[in-house]
Length: 65
Image (cartoon, rainbow, N blue to C red):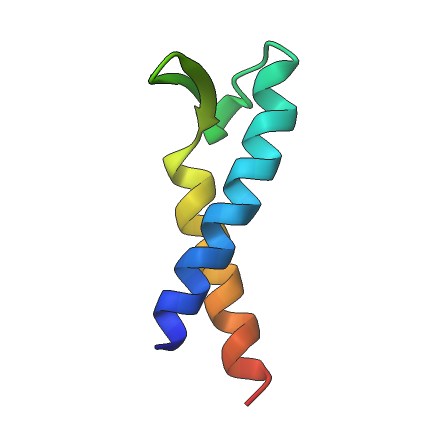
């Protein structure tokens, strides 16, 4: 259950940061922010940022126990 919560927070963190970085026309270097077309909408996403954000959220949730 904790990891599921962390994945949700990781997705939110990734969406927000990738939107800011990608909308400026940058790829974020090692963050590898990519533009993805979903049903006529352009969305920015980064797998390295998602895994880092999920890991960070998972650690923070475990620290709060």
